[in-house]
Length: 372
Image (tube, rainbow, N blue to C red; front, side, top):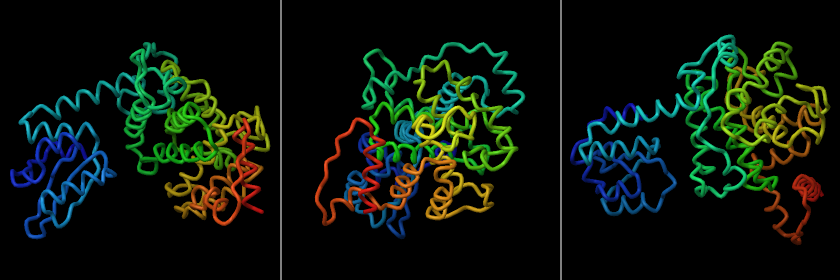
């Protein structure tokens, strides 16, 4: 954690195992060296940088190299403190994090509030205009900087990830939930074949879908459909994410996805304005990803136990055509179980090229071809 890195006093023998220039270039910081086993433990924000890690192991003649993950800013501060002697490195980091959190979510003031207090704040608080822009979600979805000086898609989503994680951190049953939903949503968007802009908008919705809903119940499409208490709670907080984030310039499709995630495929959901494919695609994707994450991570889900991925997929399958889009459930199960459609098509069969302007229609056709 950042706190442990700030308190750590790394000895010179350990620091010498990773040259300063190498540490700064690859953001790899040594934390512990075991002389007896010739093993070095390092922290890095990018554990998938295998080439740099192998280079370090060979250059330092290490028998074992153990990698742990830390925030990019924390690793940078640790390098400045230990190699450069900057005793204020983490102090600057703490102030920066506080300012960023306060400016983005000034309603919360760093602490979760009751639903009643949030409602009062939404009425009384004068929101100042946000400086972060989501322009890149539609215009610069490649992840590169925007010419007008706005933020990149990747940077914007990472900011949402950090801020929402701070909010969820106070509840053990929801810790890391929105990040998991965002990862699942991205996989499903890519599998459906959505473009970068549409994907970015839906992933943003995944990060924000529980904002302002931190009551006694964790609300998903499944339990909102099954339990009256959950439905009442969902009615009260349905538009909370929009009210909290409307000044950030997010695409309308992001808010539409969040507000449609409790709709049912049969038309009897919340707010009950749409059914079938009339429900925004983002809402249909989000309802599946959110319910799956709840079933596989939250011990307080409707089954009162954490389900295995295949068990959770079976639960989704029971509610096809009632709560969930049947085609998206089938596609999600194929994605989660690793039974990739293209892999099966390319096995010992002819290759078929599908050209259609509607990604949903091509997805349905792919599924039918696999079933045959």
